[in-house]
Image (cartoon, rainbow, N blue to C red; front, side, top):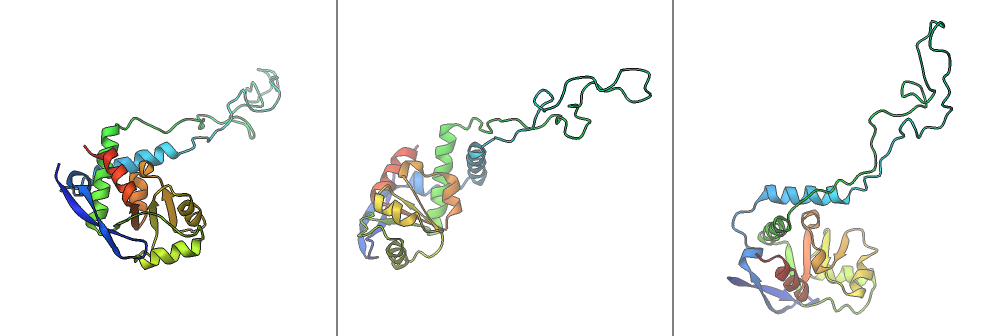
Length: 209
């Protein structure tokens, strides 16, 4: 597998070496946008709660007696006050709790990740730092560090360090994720992706073909 050198920065914004990235993970030649769309669709479908529910006839409260006799009244026949035809009655063909998840092959998910990573890298929106060795868990300090790295918009910070998670937790434009939890939806959602060197190598090992 061919690889290339990608620069690594320290949290101070100074060069701190480089990291070997695989070309078939971060430099896919033809981006498959449909595969990326399918991965996002699967992610959002899997995340749906699926808790919408309406009551069937047997679940609606009310007497089960026949309201009036079948014949001789001149009125339409009716068997129960819980009929869907009546106000406060049951709902016909309403939603019930269900899972919206569907089969999406692991190979396709990993291929979609490779395409999304390649697209982000080609746009210059992936940054690699040597580590998340923050001095404090304060949000203000993390924001100042990111601004020093040239990051001002919404950013996905890939790492599992406790100080990083606590510092980013109160910021509306920042989100942290473990390297093995990176998904296509969040790669597209955020303007910038910041990996630690350890995290980008772990993700690369996971998604390489």
